[in-house]
Image (cartoon, rainbow, N blue to C red):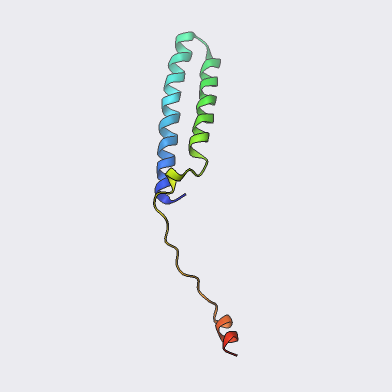
Length: 81
């Protein structure tokens, strides 16, 4: 997962959890049942985990450029002998 993918994953996580929290609070308040609120928040956590935790290709849009491998000085000297 690249840096932009991490930013997107965090944004998705926050937005999904806040939206589900608001919906579950209203539903639990309207029905007068706190357990509905808790179960809906647990479901939201599960859905969010399935969407954000795996390294989906959506989170790998910008590939990182790594530096080339450096050879230690001792390895270069032993090849010359």
